[in-house]
Image (cartoon, rainbow, N blue to C red; front, side, top):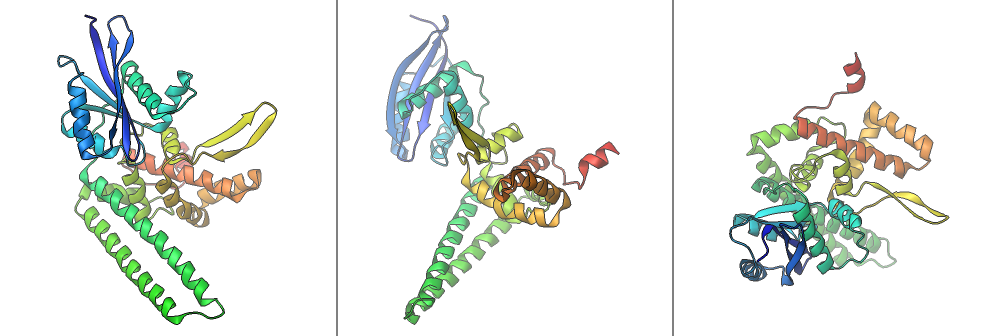
Amino acid sequence: MEKIQRQNVGIDVSKDEFAVCFMVLTIELKKKIKGTRKFPNTGDGFKDFTRWVENKRYNDLELHFTVEATGVYHENLSYYLEEKGEIVHIVLPSRAKRYASSLKQKSKTDKLDSKKLGQMGLERELEQWKPISPTFRILKGLTRERSSLIKYKTMLSNQKHALSSSAYPNKKSIARIKQLIRKIEKQILAIEDEISDLIEQDIELKKRLLKVMTIPGVGFLTAVIIVSETDGFALIKNIKQLISYAGLDVVKKQSGQWKGKYRISKQGNVHIRKALYFPAYTSVRYENNFKSFYERLLDKKQFSMIASVAVQRKMLGLIYTLWKNDTTYIYNYQQKNVA
């Protein structure tokens, strides 16, 4: 029998199912696939997956599971495996994509992605994932629920305005829409109160959030959204990685003589981008450092959106820095540091 020195299961998760690839690394450094399969992304699917793995694993050797972070769809399976005492590695999509590029993998299917993750777990020393605190998990759910309600309220407000501006407005229809809007507003306030109560119960979290809020334009809910969406920056190692995770990284398409325009990738966490949009404009309006930075880019690029996105990236980097260093925002920090 061949001697095995490492075993890993690559897992590519989607909304309804997840593809897995069980791979081993031999003493001769040969990578072999022991099995591939798909399972439903449900509780029963997790149990079937566990039984399938048990029939293939080497009990005298550590088994690793490498999962790509896919929105929220990977979370239930990751928690399930961690609660069973398994070694779980969660990699960001940008890192998995760079690894796939190094393999010159052109095609993209769930099966190929699981194989890529299986091989990645064999070759790389990945950091073991530890679940976030229950507080972060609840906060993430609450802030996303609030965002959905605000979106629904905006839709109803637009509908009410359209009905009111029509030639023969139906007053009863308008009244029903107004009643719905009032109910949604009450629900939004209830969620915000629940978020505040949750923060009040965690003294350390509250202290850190207050320090993040010293950044001009960053309010309470903005800070909570950024921190909860990144799980307290648990998987983030540097600002560049964080920018990519938020989808605020700049990309350019080019082919032969044709050169496309630079744009942000938007291949990341949309909740972070939405949370930073208005705070960026607020900081430009009330803080001279952000204002001069914005105006300098506006003069150079001639597009306000480009300058605004740059401010969002700068603000996100500041939030990360203050959180990691457990410190407050200092106006004109560089000048004071030189002095």
